[in-house]
Length: 76
Image (cartoon, rainbow, N blue to C red; front, top):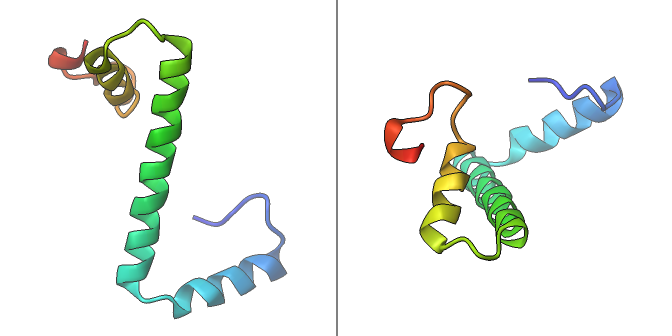
């Protein structure tokens, strides 16, 4: 998916750089970024709900992973 906030010349350079990175490294970077986003979201939940037990925080985090109306019953 092309970036919408990047001009064409910069997007081309970024594409060339990404093309040089081995697939397994790109996957590792994507997984690390996903872990980081999840950690930030969990920290935000902890700050907003300091009285919630860890299990409730994790359920709330998991609920954010599903589109509206598609949340499994066990997470409601």
